[in-house]
Length: 454
Image (tube, rainbow, N blue to C red):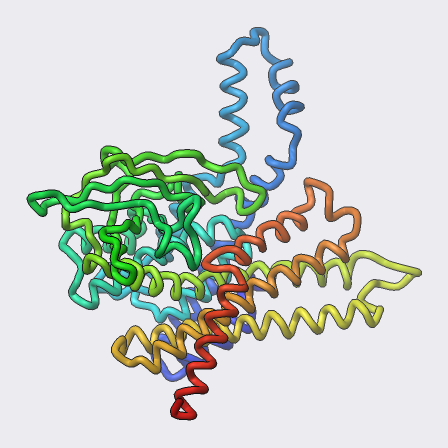
């Protein structure tokens, strides 16, 4: 059985069935599915098993085999444990060699030139095996999308063009630096404390502040940093590119998490960081416009990853229901209650996938005609809805999987509980459901008033 679902292929065929590149899209999706199943999935599973061990027992067993026990021996063992709990670098190399970072970007930028919906199909497949690796590339894509938009508008510096092409080629990884410890979500515009001040001679900006809960904090090479450049309530925030080696830039605390443990989450510290004016992305004061646009595309990628996790949980649920546990001599699938849950999750996943792939197609349509406000409204409405729907479906599928697994679900070696914990990434990431509900409701009311001429 292919790691890629029939439904994924159906969507690609429906969207691009009249194009001569259809067979290429489908072949590449199958190729990526095999890569993920044979390379990414085993690596993710290995780290899960390594973390389920008791580290003290591991230390005890290995130190007992040594004739000499000293600080160096203990530190060596600790390093071994940490390394065995990490995804090997060659796994990321294989993903880059496949071309995932540049899949949805034009050949002019060094990309593959596939439609955005095909990239979303790749992400769903990756998210099915490893939410941690999936979000790593989804976040980097979000930053690259922000640079691409400015490239298309002719508002990207030569330096910005260089960074964009490096992200597209997979030579660098990016992080999205918006959130702060006391400023996130809908209050970020009013309460952001990170500030960038233009030098007296107008040649560079000096940035001071902290960013918190940043995905890829410890692994990125390039950081998209949003900073206040004025106190203007509407146009007071700007976007800057800051590279890891920049003087004054540092990584603060890296958090130990219970979710997506192969992904880095942490704090960014900017202490008198000086960057040339060329590091400013687009226009000064337009940062929040760029952030919203980047978040809009980011929500579609999160939706794709959530669908992938939901699909995996559903398939594991079926394994237990059909082939595994019995009650009173009957397989669980023979009971109406189990059948109802199977039907429910099947429909929910299909609905979430449909919304996600439609949102991806609408994004491609808007990107081709960025001055069309109607295209923008439909894309944003569907993208927000897809993220909301898919995140909730992923949680429900994982919740049902825990319940059908019974007591075995809480054993550390069983990945079922990890699936459920990982689903919270999609609940919180790129806006919580309450925020998305407000956005969707507001847009629907606006559409209603426009139809009524109000």
